[in-house]
Image (cartoon, rainbow, N blue to C red):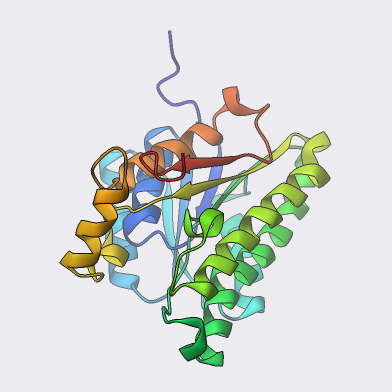
Length: 252
């Protein structure tokens, strides 16, 4: 019989968890039995709503933790707050991200710096802080949320594509460093997912995107969350340094 709560006793931090893929991931991990720290930056009310749902619907321990991930000290401190609130940390999902799209010739320095800081550098600081307790306990699961844009590139997103490609490199390097301590580091690379980030693209861009997807539709946040949850299961302990595409065949 399959264990209905295979993550019972595990403590997870999910960044950018007040909505979209992060919210769906927090729910998936809580349903599997994990205690969850719902990381957020700009939507405290939404984060508290997610926490309430995890407690009532999933019977999970949950807490909302705010942090300005553009601040390296705040990113590292978020791990310490998770350990304090949940009693430890076993799982990290680096999902928080922003976009500041423009053609490279028109891209402002501030827009480059902001995307790199939150989408890549913050993930590094969180990984580095989380690895300290994980190495001591000789167990950990880290999943970095990259993007298909970090695999094949995307016009008008040089900053975002560079950050997401950097996450893949970070994932592979960390996987080699810590595998001997039963710590896995993997990434997921979502394609076009129906979230708040893609609803602002406008109908013509969305229509063109869907036409390029072999599955013929956008993905859902829940489908990405299922892939993330799979990578942190006990049965997935021999998978590390892997990039799991969740893109409907877009990069096939």
